[in-house]
Length: 211
Image (cartoon, rainbow, N blue to C red):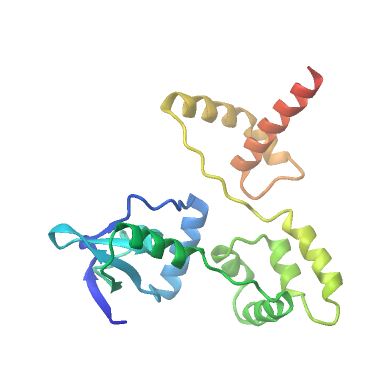
């Protein structure tokens, strides 16, 4: 398919896109785009008044709006609403499964040339899970797999929450009060606000059991 260079101001995010990206993941995407550029074209369809709707690449479009891009490489398809939505889910939803031993070798090669902190800034891994994954090899895969599964418990998962203004005020106040304890929590994640939310939920469950 032909790749077209389209002005960024003529591209609009799809309002029906169900996939949302939290701030941490978005920062990793921005870091990747800053390091490598936009290496994969967006998939768009024509809309009224010479504008285009993004079917695949909504997050990338959001990330590059303030990065100095004036034109964006795009593949243009002419599809109706239903076919557009189906294509978007197909492009974003089909994934294979990794060969863990081969993936371990891949990360060993990466870490041999690129600093660990730079790799962690681009991927949703913790230091422990990345090092365990990089230690994989075929001969002792079972042992390494067990270590990697244990490290996965520390791997960050993402949750998107939406609040009314009143609810958000209450949540922010509660988080601010428990943040000192979150910073001292032995099982904390690198995100102290997430740890604070966890501690609040844990406190509620324990209190409910007592009652």
